[in-house]
Length: 227
Image (cartoon, rainbow, N blue to C red; front, side, top):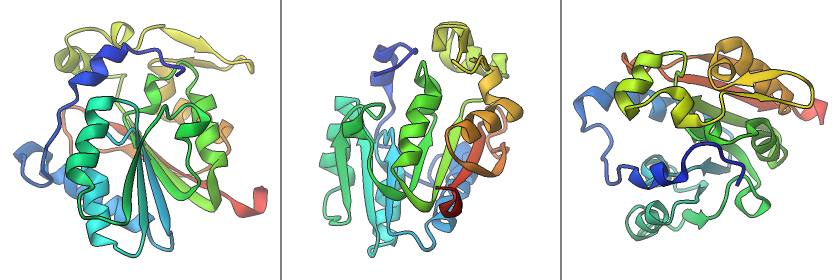
């Protein structure tokens, strides 16, 4: 796995949260559900990279029984929770324990998303390029990432600086484009990063309903006429 954050931090993921029940998360939950439901239109197979506890996949599988959903999760604790709790009784939902930066963790699909996952990799453009190649023609990719320009937010949430959380301060690609831990998630750099991975950018912005964090998001299209 081409990671740059501390892997042991991933084991602290909070499991068993229910949608629409945590007061300060209700607007965010509603926003993500609406977004995913909209992106699912006309799609048959969807994959979440870094499924966590499977909260979004469980909801979508229950409400879209005619579509197939797959969650890819590296962390054993989270994966076991997904299998034992989220996937029970849902024939259209499956989970794979795999490294989502390696071939066994990249799944062919019509729609993929990753919420706060891509920024953990030392070469995120390489990981995203593999996900894009696995998308069907006119497939969609939806990404969110922490707003690492907000140093106060990172310090308050994690207890240390963005440099400590993500590791190396700056990464330079073979194309000499500077993708720093903060620059890559600023609008211009995030757009360039996604375009370099083979997507046409449809939408980019902040999820403002999470007032303190305001994570960034981007939606990209793998255009069939440019394959």
